[in-house]
Image (cartoon, rainbow, N blue to C red; front, side, top):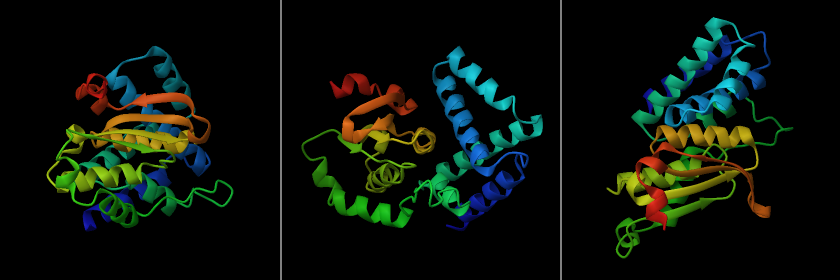
Length: 220
């Protein structure tokens, strides 16, 4: 746990040094947008996305563009060491989920407890099926999805093989945070920017795990 706390402190310290000439909310939003584009374009390059990335970074000094890359590296390192809602935690610690935005992300321990209760005896879950699908209609930064994946992994069922996820959030920032974390953890599925109540799907982002696991065919 101390390693995670150290990564969080390092992220917050570096973030606070990044682009002090911009509002903190703008810097965080741009960091998420650039990270999503970097992950998507590594998977399948798209010039339109690249142009959007270049347009964003044009408003930053070179050193701060480099810091954004370092911030993503810190997220990646933390997620590789242990599944956790890293971005949700630092978002709240930076007090970016203010009362006007109304965003308060589920604490990791609560999310993991809920996943354990919901899954119950994991062995019995897979007694008659090769995988499960999970629908998360208001995913936030992806805490509950990550918690489910962590419980499966700990039980010996690798989540990228045994779970496919459809995670939706109405807020592009939250959905972007979820896409980053699910992608870095190898979780297979889609992150949808849209309104679950109205079955609205404005934008769909598939994770690398979705493609690498041939899930389009498996789901059929």
